[in-house]
Figure 1 (tube, rainbow, N blue to C red):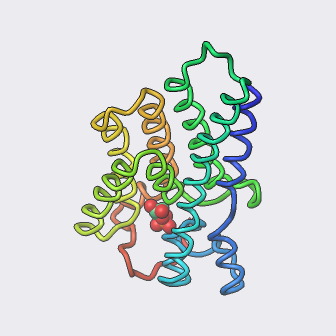
Figure 2: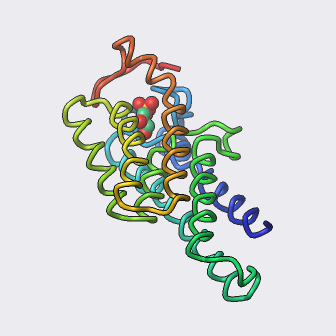
Length: 218
Ligand code: G3P
């Protein structure tokens, strides 16, 4: 149990690292949460600060997910090799559950950062990092869904939502353990819920397309 606690806490702290907020402060002296969509994610950084900062934030935020997953793997392996986990525990079954907890904690940290008064992004970039670290084929397939939708619609939020829906299906197609299917379902649902305001704008037909200048929306 304490192993779960340590993993969740550290993964949450990784996820909380406020990349987009720091980019806004350091590059333009602004609070990114007060412009555009109000999100600290890479899309809003791209919209507000440009392509290079947007790409950089995307990379670092994805890396947070990669780190959280590898932390889950590593701490499980250390605890197992030190006999801190009962020998009756089947690592093949239980390691994915610990990794799942790490992933969900990182997603939560990214959008409810302890460093930003529990505000943040929409957990898309960190989610991609999580998927790539668990299974790169699933990560790339999710990015493929994202790419197809963005090529057609030019709307990032719609592409993220479609990617989030695809994750659980891909987990099943790629024969992943139950823990990762549950990660796909809960993480995907969480990302969709984080897009509430985008969904309202999509229905109203006011969601901006890539490259479109926007007034502050939230
Ligand atoms: O990465 C989040 C994206 O799906 C939507 O971001 O800033 O348009 O709300 P934003």
